Image (cartoon, rainbow, N blue to C red; front, side):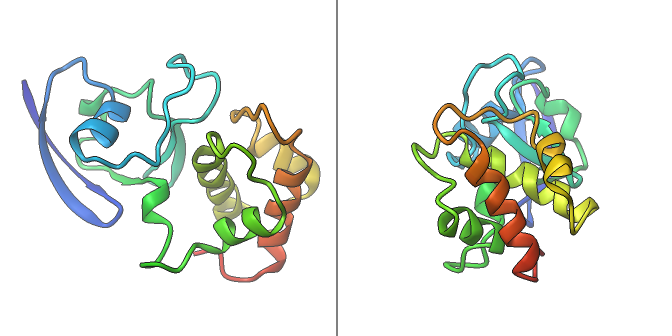
Length: 156
């Protein structure tokens, strides 16, 4: 076992993990943050996407020990209390949520994209979201949601 310290959603954490424990398992099973979903367990679908130091990563492929000293944001960390993040609002308003399984990863990938490029073209949005798969929406409404968030102002 090893002890790791990191910040998740603005809260300092210290947990004891086995050397083979995935970040996804720490988030869901140890910390009880179930917004991050497990899809393929192979880094192909993006359902488990979280931000590590502002960069999107597949938490199913990251060993917990790799986040020592880092800052993690999950979908639970985007809203301010009961107030949804502008991206979450845009996904709802654009109808970009159907079953919702991919949504947390999609929203976090979109946040990372908008943090680095506040006004991306549709092509840049498609490229920025390419690591996230959705079986329901056909992606059109997801792209529209990201564009809506761009025009909506605050993406903090």
